[in-house]
Figure 1: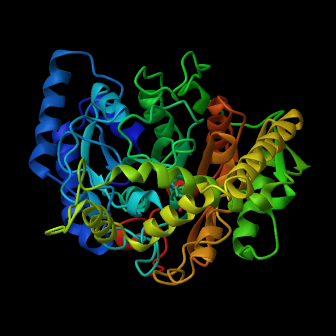
Figure 2: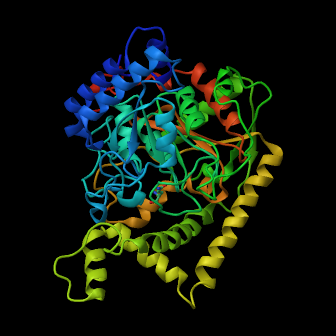
Length: 493
Ligand code: GLN
């Protein structure tokens, strides 16, 4: 019952089988029962959730229901919300209350959604495991000794364990798709510019994009339809972006005539053999559905991680300079002078990974190194983008693994930032090129979920949704849910 998709819950609400209040109560009960084990939510205000649900039921009784009327949706702690704290899981923003709602939050409210709370994440979205959160690590519902991925790990774990039917995440280098992959759910990163970034705490402004984390492809489409669109207050949200038929795209049940590119650089030695097998089998299934698999090359893939870890920290070092203890957040006790206040407040407020990024970024941008690092990384970015443009001359979509490995153990990579950075090897190029990407469940490796990633040209999310819907309909992977949390599969733990 709790593992029901958003679209089925919508049907139940529409035909009067349930109410927004009943749904809110059901998921609040599950949060109360399981959040201690998972640490997926970092802020919950049950009374306020019930208030929103009652208001939605009242709205429904007087008007026609809106697109997400009465549906519970959790949001990552990176989204500014007027209600409750917005802390980006950082001590520097401890108890910060945003003066306004992020554009996507306004959109969800306007669509009638019930916001169920803030989910755990890596501090400032910097990480792949949700271990750098100031609120402590989040856990994977498939095995609570393992990471749920990151940085939107709280959103992924909450959906996977049915503490909420859906959630919002953000993706700068893979933070929606990678946690979706390792938690066995669906995650969509829209084209850069499709969704407004206003009110989303900035990490790397040329890469950040918000998107849904859900049980099914159609659920992801429902949420994206609600949050996408131009926002005059965000100059990077695109005016007159090509429209797509979000829900219509999900009706596809075959892949007749679809050309799927299989990039050789994404099937490399070193990736987990069981992960590889899942992806190979998924591609076989696509063939059965009528697709043609075409071998392609994205030759600059191997430089993507390096370019990203110059560009993203450079932008972060600029974005995070605003946390100066004057305008926002934590201020140290009894500063001796202005400089002492800045340095000590920032030293106390930021965690180790965030400091590492600020230092790397400030170094890459400093005079003397700017050309060697920042400019070079931007040139590589252009080449990566061109790789994709060339590939899409030959194929309609690209399919890859989302992550080279399944969920690793908590603590396993915390002392080695480089191997942690390599978890994003298959997701990062998509952000550098500004493209949409979707991860969906496609099997298990070592009893842990594996994700299949779809990539299309910019603004072609409909193609992404159609391919993923056809695959989802032909297989049963999206219906697998972790037994330990009342689901139907496994018992890895
Ligand atoms: N794991 C990547 C990083 O640490 C991506 C994070 C993200 O997409 N927010 O930068």
